[in-house]
Length: 169
Length: 105
Image (tube, rainbow over all chains, first blue to last red; front, side):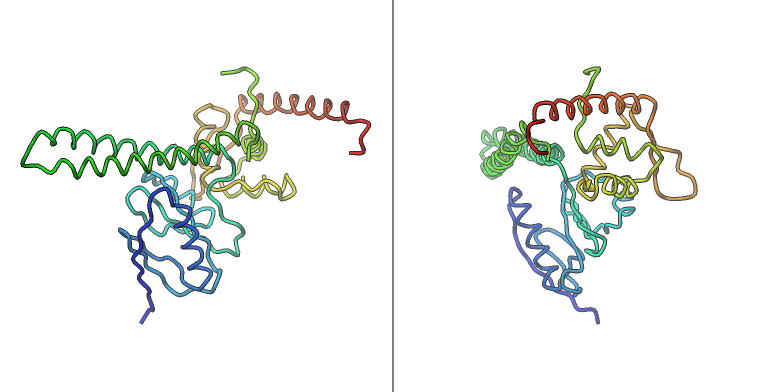
């Protein structure tokens, strides 16, 4: 029987780099990601350091998946808008973004998604706050949290934008 | 857009690599080889750049035949941009050498 490890863990969206680091630490210790679902990570045994894991917010895109396949990366799965990839370390370093511009573009994509979901929650919350039978405050709470997340992502973006004034990568 | 665009290093090496048709992985390898291992184009960066460069008409995808791998090539417009950039880089180097001629470089 195939051995498997299932870990339930929560990461805030602004900590996606921490999440990626954790997944790589798991791979370093011989457990490679095989499946993701909501707050749940599935791992199979691998050679320690056999794989590099990367994650990215990217819309479902057949073309991108075949591009990743061509460069030797395996698509592990997706969770909402996040795509998880892994590649054998023997193929060389595996990164998704190699210059500041593309890192900023990625953060912008995350920010836009948060703004859309946050805005929708705000709207629904406000509309329902006049409706006593409905729990509009839940949406308002979600909106507040999403706006906080947006702020964190913007902070990261700003520091990259400052670098970009002088540097390319 | 500016008639004399200044390219980023990634853009420069992608265009240069596409002087002969290449697929995605080929571009990465060629850019790395040309730069003596210094420039490693990351997957997402390259994919995003390829899409934008196609939109600008500086490169174009080749019709996919039997092989699954999608290849791209430089267009005449892209070649003109690259030549223009090369002239800018020559000036950059010449200026650096003039100013720093006293120093041992």
